[in-house]
Image (cartoon, rainbow, N blue to C red; front, side, top):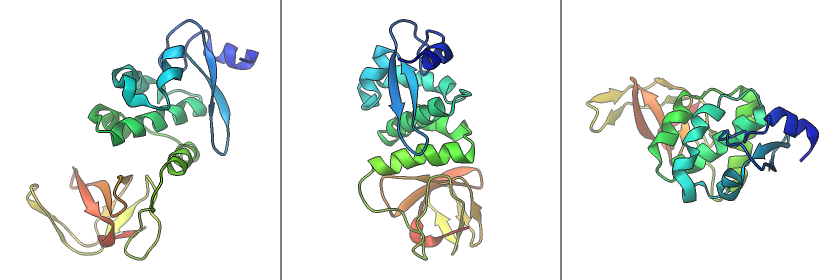
Length: 184
């Protein structure tokens, strides 16, 4: 591990804060950069569900001042959220990443995913964090309201199904069919 990385980490894992033997982990993408990880993080970062409770530490590391640490935290939280860890989704909902950091983080996620992209009613590809408008009134089952045509939904979340997205309408998180949406 190089001296700059060692110095920045201060002898602690940049994701969980554990002290001890550290290893360099490459955060891939447009701006590849190494971060310092402990053996526990290094052993399960590619398959975080193997040690899901360990990753609760990402609630703090997502706020790091180091973009590569934010990207690694975000990508790991997305994997956990996709596997049903609701606490990971809760962290993602309150986390804020600068637009260029979010683009870097999503770049890595999209390259890992196989399958077709999520597209709106006009065939435009939707990305994580985009804003969309609803193109027709939609009755929201179980919530007791109708999502009105023209309602803007910001900061959408993609799902494993390319025909669905998650977003907040009237303060309620709901699943919307992409065929009833238009990218803003």
